[in-house]
Image 1 (cartoon, one colour):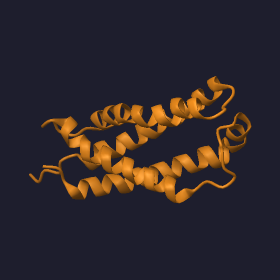
Image 2: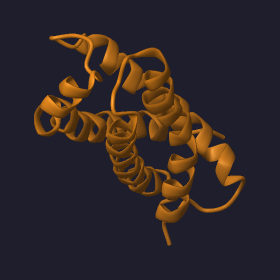
Image 3: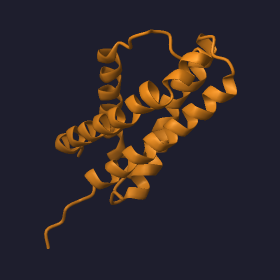
Image 4: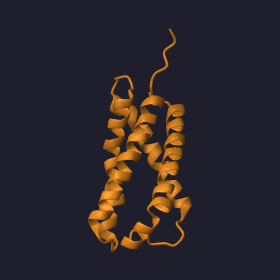
Length: 139
């Protein structure tokens, strides 16, 4: 059975991790680079849409993880493994689809930065997932 409480905890953790990682990465550390290569299309991001996307991603990933476990106990390794797998979907949109839709040049620089961002993001959220879904057995 999928625990609604654990999904909610993961959504909260995923949201916090994403905001604490994504905002500084895209809007502070590498803002000027992203702007110079054409990866930023707005002067002011529509944060409500971005935050909604993060909540939706967290809910879907959190809901699917117990099915991935298939009776195995949750571990940090399995959390990271599943998040990297699920992250490929997000990565395909944030990297390849954006390059296909927008005039981003050089593509290689954008893909390098997005790949690095996504790897760190999904490892961090995978660690959280493994810990949150870990069974708490009372001896």
